[in-house]
Length: 265
Image (cartoon, rainbow, N blue to C red):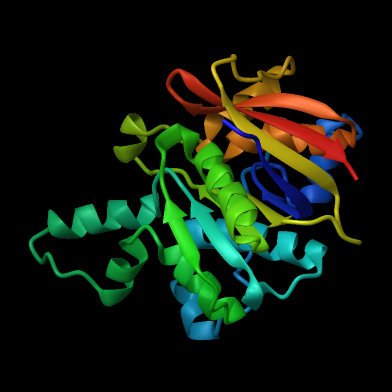
């Protein structure tokens, strides 16, 4: 395939022991040691208080990463097309729904219901930022980050539209965790533009490959990479943190990965 190209203008990250992109960059470049604490999810900015109270971990992870990336880019969030990618949804909410349906009074609250849909984070983002541009929501199991990146790059390349990519997943309580053992919440966001500009951080190109996915030599980082579908972005983030021309391969589908080339601005 012909490589898809875009220019990165903003990065956002939240995860276990990772509060933001600068801290993540320091950890990846070994300027700092990652704290083993669980992900601390802030209340989502921009939402009215009633909506803010209704949000669960998946919305908080998605919006925290998205707000950071957009702030760094200097773009108006309301004008950005968006791609939201996750392998699942709000696991805690799913668990509560299952418990309710299995109880003697199987009556679901409207809040439980509307938070159960896969596009809930995209909806909350549109409320928080008054975004009216097109928004796509997709899922590709453990390859969800790569699928979201491909979709975002395609939008930038074909439509010439500045696009926000947000990938995120959160953990599940038992017994769902036994079937889907995601360890903790992780979110990553990128603002992508069709042309270089004053805010450009790096150029990114991607194409499909059958090469093996990148694996960290550091056991802690490798465990983190494998712990959450959104954390499959870490090799790409590592290349961005180092600010050097790099080629990395990230997980996508069985037998097919995504080769990503990074060129610093």
